[in-house]
Length: 549
Image 1 (cartoon, rainbow, N blue to C red):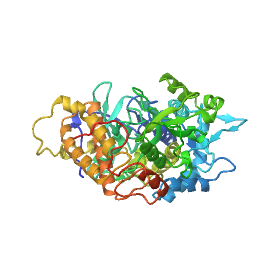
Image 2: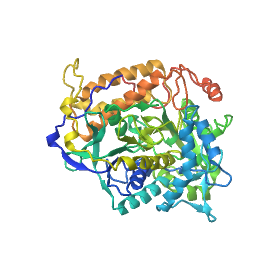
Image 3: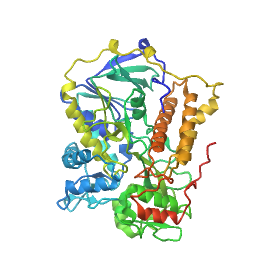
C-alpha cells in the first residue's frame, strides 16, 4: 500500500523560521534524553518535545529495567530469555548487544542520578513474565519510569550544550535533492508558527503508537508520529504487525486503561475468572508466560465472564511496599486490592516494530537515526520480553551517540539546501467526491481506533485485516486539508495503522504478538488447546466496541 502524500502540510520555505544544531533529537523519553546527554560532548544538541519534557511513555513505565547484574544471573541467561520471548524473530546480534551492554548503561544511568530500590543494602530485584531470573531493577516500588525520567530531565537541564524546546510537534522531515535528511519541519504549538530545525544528525526518539487503538495503556502523546514522518520521507519500516497488548490493564467503567505492572504477577498475584479459578494454572509458566500468551488467554476467558487479578497472595505489607502507585490508583476507582480482586483486560501497550535500523540506530535514510520504541533493530522479535524496553533506549541510544561523533564534525546544512516542498508534493486527490463534513472529520480518529481494535487487534484474520486495510486507505482521502496538531496526529495514526494492517495481512502465520485465527500458531500448542475449548475462529471477542461498517 502506497502513501498518499509526501508532506502533511503544503508549507513554503519563506514562511518557516529556521534554527540549527549539531544534533536534533525528537522526543524526550528515555531514548531521547539519554542519547542527547551522550551526544552533547562538544556538540550543540536540541531536544524537541511534543508536550512537556517530562511527558512520554517512559514516565508511565512501572515495572522497571531488566539487566543481568545479580551474581546468580548472566547476560547469557538474559539473552536466552529474550530470544525465547521473541518467538524466533529476534536478531541475535541485537540481543547480544542489549544484554552485554545493558549492565554498564544501567550503572551509568545510576551515575546520572536515578535511584533504584534497595533491600538490605543491595539492589532489590524482581521477576516478570518469561524471565528465568530476578533481574528487574525498580524505583519507588512501581514508579520506575517516573524516577528515570526525573533523573534524566535533571541531567539534561544541567548540560550546557543541550537545549530543550517544548510544545513542538514534528510535522515532517526535511531533505535535500540527494535524499539526505537535513532536519525537521516543526509546528510551534504555542505560537502556531512553522519552524525548520536543521542538524547534521537527526534522531527520532518519538516513542510508541498506542493511540492507534481505542484501549491502550499509553499516554495521549503516543500517536506514532516518528514512524509516520519517517515513512513519508521514504524510510523503511519493519515488523509493524507485532503490536504488544499488555495482559493486565485496569477495566473499570469511566477509568483509563491504567497499566497494572507485570511485576504484580512476578510478586505472586493470580489471574482468576469470575468463579475464582486460576485459568492459567495448567499452562507452562502460568501467569508468568510471555505477554502474548497471557493476553490471549485473558481475552478468551473474558468471553465467559470477567477476569480479575488477585493481589492478595502477595500479602498486604508487600503490596503497600512494592506497589504504592497501583494501590492508590485502584483505590481511587473504588477497588481495594488488599481485600478484593481487580478487574483487568488486555490493552495496546508497545510496538515491537518500527523504523528499521541497524545496531547503531542508522535508518535507510542518510543522517537519520532512530532509537527507543519508534525504532526496530530486531531486538524484541515478535514479542518483547518484559522490562527490556527501557534498556533498549539506553543501549542503542548510546550506540547512536558513538556513531554520530564523526558525522557532527562535518559542515552544518543550510536552509538553501532544503528541497522545496513544491517539488515534492505528491498527493493523490482523484476520486474523492464531495468535501468531507467537519463532524465526520472530527470523528475519524475514533473510527480508526475502533477499527484497529476490532480488526487488527489481539486476534486477527484475513477478512478483518483486508477490510481494515481498505477502509484505512479510503479514510486517508478525508485528510487532504489539515493544519492543526490534532489533525496531524490523526493523519499519523492513520498512516501507522495502515502499515500495521498491511504487514499483518502479509504475514500468513501466527507468531508472538501477531495471532491470526486462520493461521494457528505452532509455537503455542498449549495455548491453542486451551483456546479451542472456548471460541470459534471468527468470533469478535472482548469488549464492547461497535463494528465499523
